[in-house]
Length: 251
Image (cartoon, rainbow, N blue to C red):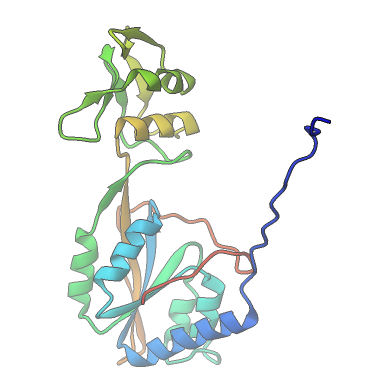
């Protein structure tokens, strides 16, 4: 008897929520580092990518400790009022923890920190919903991949995918080819999923991962200094403290 098409194996995976013990451990970690280091920086991220944030963690591993995610937990650790603050002045920093932000504890001088993060930029591929930073028009001729120094045409087996993503191509000598210019995206307009995928396929990096320093707490004085506004477009989506978002902490 043939197997019924309705008989399907369904894998049920359960992602465990962060326990109270886990949150308490993170609060303790934040407070321990507030006592260990002189400065605590509040930072935001533009074009967030875990890979690039891990690079930052690695490069600062020997001189700093970084926490990212779980804003409500970080704020609770610092204390959001004068009565609750872990050390003098920290409540001023805690009250600014909103959205997708992180904390960086370090003894490095402020000028060293600001100069380093001003220079740290990592280009990356845009995602659906990002705004195009420039207009991209694909010219008449073979559709080219720009991942290498010398662009190469797409192989013939990629033609169906290119067509599915909106390109009107024809095969010329086994190469997907455009017979008319194609405006892939326009500067200032939001990218669709198809546009973002096409940009990635051709190797066009449209966004830049940046870290913007927002404020600095100095344990020596208890004062919080606000940083000058930057041109970094911050990711502002807030994490759900009761969800399964992972904290990203330096080793």
